Image (tube, rainbow, N blue to C red):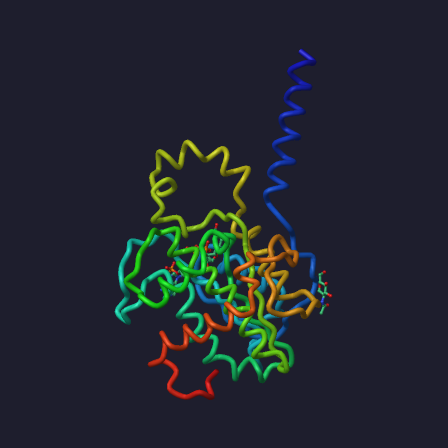
Length: 277
Ligand SMILES: NC(=O)c1ccc[n+]([C@@H]2O[C@H](COP(=O)([O-])OP(=O)(O)OC[C@H]3O[C@@H](n4cnc5c(N)ncnc54)[C@H](OP(=O)(O)O)[C@@H]3O)[C@@H](O)[C@H]2O)c1
Ligand SMILES: *[C@@H]1O[C@H](CO)[C@@H](O)[C@H](O)[C@H]1NC(C)=O
């Protein structure tokens, strides 16, 4: 009998320890953002929604907003059926990267008005799985399609490189910009991904997912941390509420500069005046 009791305790403790481990870092910052505006793209679902709720708990509900404190470029898609958008861009690159590139430049003036402003680009470890060749090929020729994983990886590498180059352009301003990896989170982002959108396959994986995958609230912790931490280093990559190194490509200043310029070329019609950059 005692063997079963001991066995249950051991299995229970190990499972609990694993769940805690994979839940990742927790943001312990107590900073409040009373009266400050945070713009979050994709705030109606998943990590963006969890972040909005966490932030709302830290505001006194004072509605007299005076300045934009932060822009969180969070909206994103994964494994979307291959298609070009109305604007003629590859859909994953446009949603995850190009749209945020334009939005960020349009909001820069408002962000610069704030005392301390931050931009957070929600990236992913998937940025490590693609090379410069894929990055440039997909960006130059938007109809270029290699795989859903490449499309997603490229869009996230693009965001980390953008973070680096933009941080340099904003060096002597009040605005810092960082990239964040939320970790693996249970959200709607997998709605098009067959192993998870199929209810039977999903059911088989469910017990493991309970241990390995973060809830949206847990997934929002590193975003929250990068928004609230007093550490104002810029152009960096956060994962599990810590600063870590992104891939060597993403950390390369020369590639970041070249890629920023390539993006401007691809988006030329959206940037008619030089002053916007
Ligand atoms: N979940 C993960 O495991 C994971 C891992 C690494 C990185 N991320 C990143 O985390 C971010 C948030 O994703 P999530 O996991 O929270 O997924 P989600 O629940 O699917 O949320 C994605 C959000 O983006 C919005 N969105 C999608 N396409 C858009 C468009 N064309 N224009 C405007 N908004 C659009 C969605 O709005 P609708 O619902 O209205 O479409 C939704 O609010 C994404 O950038 C994702 O790449 C997630
Ligand atoms: C931020 O944290 C990193 C890592 O802990 C540290 O090396 C760096 O000096 C800090 N930067 C600032 C500006 O506080």
